[in-house]
Length: 181
Image (tube, rainbow, N blue to C red; front, side, top):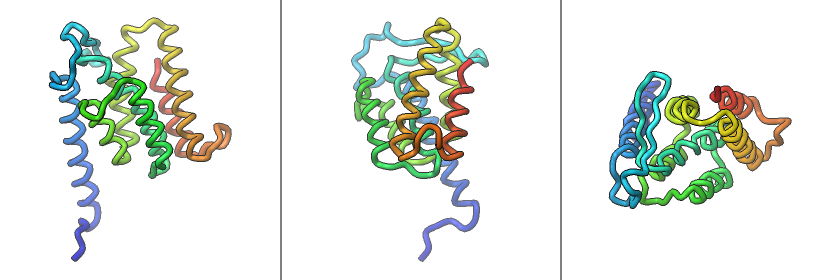
């Protein structure tokens, strides 16, 4: 018996399922977390370009979002190698994310399913646009440089040299670069 959905209905069902899952996890990022021992006063508050106020409990929420471009470049060609996945998880660990955190679970969802376009749109809206309002110009340039360097490293792990990136990876790199004001 074939368990796949016929035609596009299967893809639409998967899209709907993962969209609901990501929304729920994004809400968890904003809600109190029993595993989080950060004092309540350490939350970060910013607003996006639509004026929506965004409150993140701590730096872990922002850390997870900062990894979105790395995940997007890893998925750019439709598959992600173990080395790329491990680099993203290693960076998550460096940023203090733990498997028990909501932010880490959100990241795991991104690593499990390619969602390049949606992921970059979410990252731009909730991370870049919000931080652009509060960071000084030099800090924004430094952040952009750091993210692009890390994205190139992920692309290079897949065997591509920066000068000869496949068109899909080049397109994602351009989207990452254009996301910054």
